[in-house]
Image (tube, rainbow, N blue to C red; front, side, top):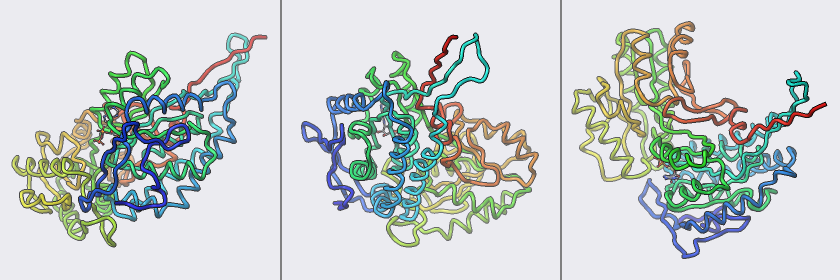
Length: 483
Ligand code: ADP
């Protein structure tokens, strides 16, 4: 079982107190690298989630709002605590998620970056007066906290995803009820330990609930005291939340699935494109919503690009994220592993060619899937239509700019995409034609605290990061003054 000074208890946190389920229920957490059970964590019922909402209501201050300086201090305190304990947080994250330790620690730095960024830009939420005088009045625009918010996060970035939401919520003065994914609750508990011990957050400002998603989700959707949910996860659950909150016309911020095209034109620097693809595709073992999912390579360079990929993939090490020199850890669970294997097998059955990687039939004892490259991918294949969420690089060829823009957009999703070309004008044209919230030109880099990030189409609603991310958590209120 996991031991850590940041995991002295494995409970929820409500109104400034650690809280177990009234009936003592727990759920198990596993290390995907070994299959070992590493913790049994409180599994809370609806009554405890309602307590968390009530605690959030008590912490919400509307008529005497928390001053900007107070909110800035919370953000700085959390940033400092994350930076001070990055090694231990990274170790916990690595043990429950499986990603390489260096990557896990880098995720903690990334998370600290959001608290830092909003501590510097919280001034964007100060009230301001309109320069013109509509209707002969002086108008002031205030940015009021939305209220108690529900923050629901996935397992693929156990600290990064909550950092984006919580930093903006606190900057806006919104108390939160936070639900982590059941695969990775330990990093969240560790974050709550830090917030409880090292920050001046008032009781009820941050609340942690864990357990059955359907039970917790229902309380958050039904409660009139929770006017907003911010959710990152699958499009399927995002759609359900839209349905379940429709009666209350709840505010939603949704970061959902992706199906990222990665386009390589013949004039691209192929080595740089291959290096960027490797870094992008295998981050988190391929389990991120911005990982390239369909690789379109101009037919003139398909063979040479494929050879460069195969050579790089052959040098990668798969193993336990805690071991030195590991590039790719295990997949999160059996369902994740089986999906990758199904996608590879389906692509091969439908005429794809294995450029690198093992025969999928030879695998299966553990959760390690070696990096795999398949060419000759077509729109009929599962790996083209669905997000694989694993270390498969599926390649297709194209001839013209128009054709590849249409192919890139041939998905219900619109989160991230990447374009590699030496021609700046073409890059601008292609970027404008691609219906994705993030377009990397000659880079495979994803979201950062400074830039608004989010999806078009079925990839979501709203943005995280940038000042746009702050404005998700406020209601602008106009107060005209006559005379
Ligand atoms: P993933 O495929 O990444 O696991 P999910 O959408 O299933 O994505 O889960 C993302 C987060 O949403 C997790 O914290 C999960 O427990 C939670 N979740 C799943 N179903 C619901 C639901 N009906 N209501 C609220 N949260 C949910």
